[in-house]
Image: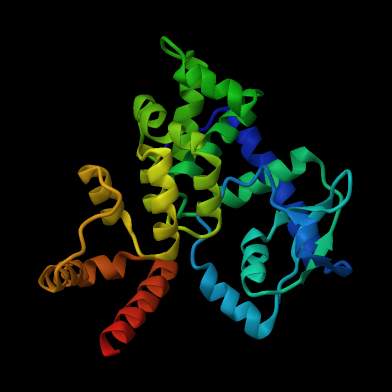
Length: 299
């Protein structure tokens, strides 16, 4: 942001940075590692990240080389461990068929785990809309000394929120690099936090976020039928949109000529300016997708 942040927001960011540096120092010190059964680990409730894409590639690497970087977790009451960092590795290890993974275990309070998860997300550039909503509310709450739920109720309640809340929302969105109005944030972002559990779980399993979130508009029966197609990669955003528009259980199969036209349309998007503007992660993903397309056409 161009303007100076409020004292509350500056303090919030400093707290997240301090916890992040503390936990990173623990990881660098390489404390004793223990192998923990996958079933004894559970995800962090403070982690906003949902779009755990490209798990197949990571799972293949783990199957070949093992988990090279230990996960970080804390012991929880009643037994087992809760992840602080490493959820993608945990889910990919499960997909790779591993029974256990290396874990660095350290004590951490709920507050420390929450602040660490927040800082991790603040340093990412590829937050999806769900994650922006979650992280913005958490950051606002930290700045105002309120819970995310309290902040949300003030944004979505009748009437205008207080000047303090409005300023905190503007600051939080600015920190995240999002130029959104309060009304746009409340209408298009906050409702994503209410995704049904099965849709949330599908995104965490690696299903594409943009396709899954469209299923909010489908009936329960349609979600049950369409979600497996999205998870398998058979359907993408355009397929879900077509099914919703037509109001049927599946879009009509494309004719070969239609598929040729669609392929040409997509390839026209690969202008040098657009490809060059992609960050390294997206370029790597595009390269893999192109290799898959080439392999399909050679079969």
